[in-house]
Image 1: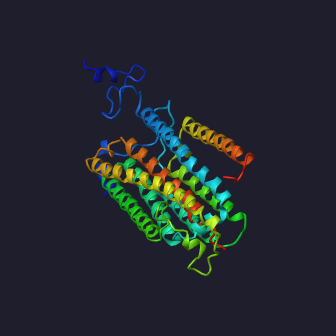
Image 2: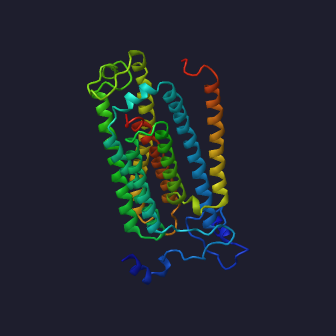
Image 3: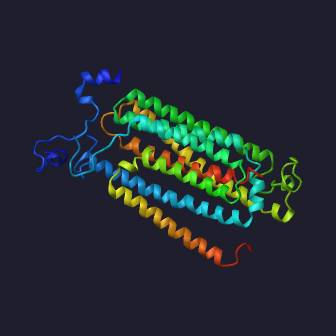
Length: 120
Length: 244
């Protein structure tokens, strides 16, 4: 229906590739098929997290849970949040933010680990 | 000649003298405006990531100190409701992503429907969360004057290992983190739901299907961010030790 209308109203047509200004990164429209695949992967990840939690893997239980969670978060960031198709500036900003977070966490944890661990 | 007309005179591109009404004067192109808005949104989301990470860091330290208390306290949560809520939130992220796609494709009807679906799923999440909070209230597991460690020292369920009074007295720390983290997450959901209602009316008026999708796109980024927080909260709070 929407495609049919677009044929008769060219001024309301969706943007065509190659129209963007060459000074900036060309805007990429993620297709619904990819969204659907990411969605299914996220649902599988959720089932996997819950399933693995009921299997006794000792120290690996929280590690596997975090690996699955990070993978899911990565899928959301790359595709749902379009970072894969963003400019280098946005990518670098995000990466430097996470790097700063890593420094803050490392400093905090090294402080807690090195003094009176568990004595509060 | 008004300021609008002056701003449209572009010497590098003499063929484009008109510009869309949503392009602000201090941007050269729509793409530049869009990138700028997106970068600003990401910087805001980074501050949000920093904020939630503080809570996650506190969780990490206390979980290692009082692991036994965290295990028994975590086991009182309803994993079924938690899993359903995770699925509901992922579905809402998918409908939001499809909403952004509909805006790009300039399909107003689809955009409005996807935004309404996102609103319904977000509200469902909050409803299930309210049921879970009410369960904690009836079980006397909300930190405060009515908090009871009885269920941890003398568990009703024979499969649950009892913990000593000393360790059981640390269970409120788990529940403070549980209510703090899920509460902050739920507050973000409430803000998101309120913004969604406004966006649905603006989308219905055709504001986002004429080439200007930045608002919907940036709201999508916020919504997906809230989803990511829950992706971490769910295994860390609900699934600490289900295998014992």
